[in-house]
Image (cartoon, rainbow, N blue to C red):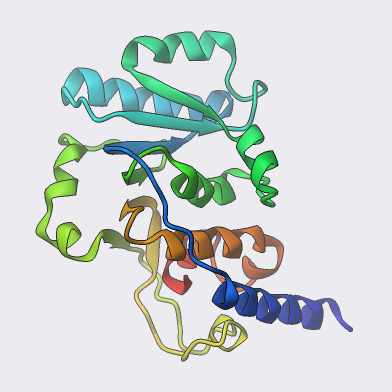
Length: 220
């Protein structure tokens, strides 16, 4: 079996597993911001984002910052965030406890959403800087009705992309979704979030067909 054929078979098998999986209700409390940021460069972006939230926008929205272990967030970095009211979440023990195949920051974003302590979460890339308090997003009529809001990307997911039949989905041209910002009520969409994580665990195969993690939300 060629590598391409093997990847196709693995994606088909994954789709069957996702459909057969029992949905577990997600728990959580309150509303908050989820940011994935580790290492000096990305941490700098996250610090600017959170500093702006607290000092320029006067936002009191709770923040979780997820990262891969002590190699990414040093004691000095943690000390900088302490007065800004940030909950640091080392992803490594959570990944180990769940047995998930999560190895990089793109994959970690959906995993952090799935395992966040918030009932309702706004995922922001570390280099996103809101111009107003993002707490207001949770009261948008569109969000209250659907329980999720996505932002469009500039490149559509085409109907002739091979990912559709491999996942057993009807091919169609669809507006592509951003993953730099995702607003979701975890209690209403736990099954979809679990599917997003499973798709991102298959990054080695799936990312050949879609651009990183962003369209895994649409496909889920």
